[in-house]
Image (cartoon, rainbow, N blue to C red; front, top):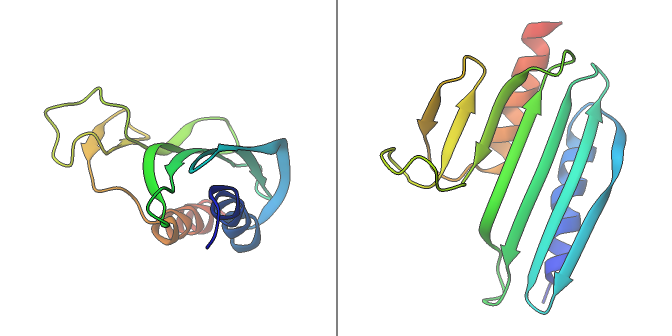
Length: 130
C-alpha cells in the first residue's frame, strides 16, 4: 500500500519528468500525518514559465482523494495562464467547488482536473508561445 507521501512525491515527479522542467523554484514540501498529506511545489520550466502546485489529499481509503488543490500556471512574465482550484468561492458554477481561472480573468466551472490534462494544456501553451 502506498502512503500519502509516496503519492504526493509521484505527483511532483510526474510534472518534473514530463514537462520541460528546469528547476525547483523552492524545494517541494511534502508533509503528512497518518492518512493525510500535502504537497506544495513551485516548478520552473525552461521557457521561464512556472507551475505552482498545492495539493492536500486524504489517503484513508488506500487511494487519493483530493481535498484541496490549486494548480497555478503562469507565463514567463508572471501572468496567469490558468489556475485550477476548488476553493469554494463560486457556488453558482457547475462542478462546484471545482473551477478554472483563465488568463482573461474569467472563471468557469469544470470537473477536478486530471494531471495528464494539465500537463497537455501546459505543453500546448508552450508550443503556441514559442
